[in-house]
Length: 98
Image 1 (spheres, rainbow, N blue to C red):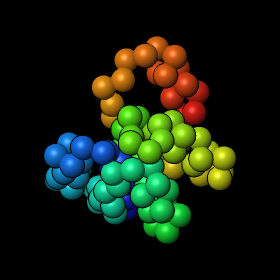
Image 2: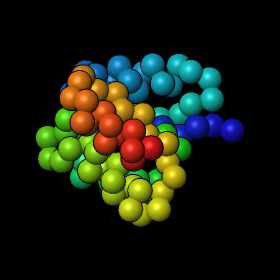
Image 3: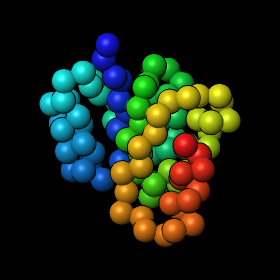
Image 4: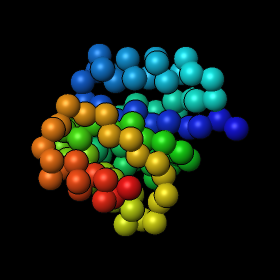
C-alpha cells in the first residue's frame, strides 16, 4: 500500500524539500503540492489523499482552516502540521482537530 501525501507549503523551496524527502521514503507518494489553502482544498476534493503535510501560515487562510474544512467534510485524512508556529493556543487547536 502506498500512502498518498499532499504537501501544503507556501514557500516553494520548502515545499520542494518536503516533496523530495517524502518521495525518497518507501511506501510514500506525493500526489500534489499546494502553495495556498485554496489550492490544497482543490486537490483534496479531486484526489484521494492519506496524509497532508500542512504549513499553518498560508497566504490566503490559516492552515487550521484547511484542517477544519477537512473535518467538517467528514474526512479522516491524517494531517501533520509542519510549521514554525509556536503559539500554544494554536498548538492546542491543532491537536484538538486531530
